Image 1: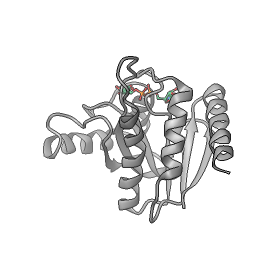
Image 2: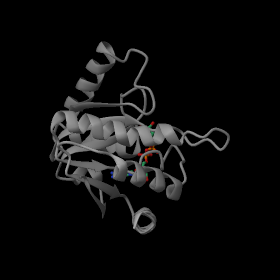
Image 3: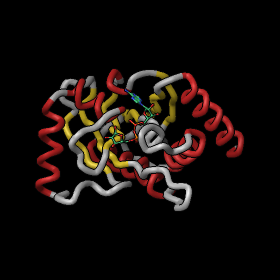
Image 4: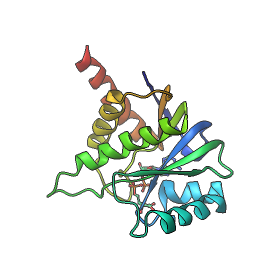
Amino acid sequence: MTNLTLTMGDITEQKADAVVNAANSSLLGGGGVDGAIHRRGGPGILEECKALRAADYAAGLPAGQAVATTAGRLPARWVIHTVGPVWSDTEDRSSTLASCYSESLRVADELGARTVAFPAISTGVYRWPLADAARIALSTVRAARTENVTEARFVLFGQEAHDVFAETLRALEQGAD
Ligand code: APR
C-alpha cells in the first residue's frame, strides 16, 4: 500500500528515491519544474534524456508516458520524466493526466524506488485548473497498487496549491469511509 503524503516546497530539494519531472515531449528541458530539475540536477540528466530520444523516442515522449534517468546532483537516485496534457476546455484529457501518475509509479516500482516525489503536473504552464488536477492526481495515486513504492509525496510549490491538495485529499478520504 502506498502511503500518500503532502508537503510544501521545492521538488529539487526532496530526498526521495525518485523525483517526477513535469517535462515536455522533447525531454530537452523547459521552465518550471523541468527547468529547476535540469538546473539543479546538472547536465547528466539532459545527456540521458538525449540518449532516450535517440534510442526510443525519436518523435518525443508522448503525453501520459514516463521514462527514467539519473537524478544527477539532486538528492534522489532517479528522475522520472512524464509529459502532462495541456489543459483543454473542449477535450477531456483527464485520462492522460491520470496516466502521468500511474505510469510514473509503474516506472518507479520497476526501478525498486520506495519513495516518489510528485509535482502538481500540468497545473503551471499547461494551465490545468488546480482543484481538478488535484482530484485526478490524488485519486489515481490512491488507487495505484505497487510492489516497492511505500510513499508517494506530493510537493506543492506554494500555500494555495498545498491547501487545494489537502482539501481534495480530505474529501477523497471522507468519500472512501
Ligand atoms: N518544485 C515543485 N513544484 C514546482 C516547482 C518546483 N521547483 N516549480 C514549479 N512548480 C509547480 C508549479 O507551480 C505548478 O503548480 O509545478 C506545477 C507544474 O508547473 P510546470 O512546471 O509549469 O509544469 P506543467 O504545467 O506540467 O507544464 C509543463 O512547462 O516547464 C515547462 O518544459 C516544461 O513544457 C513543459 C511545461
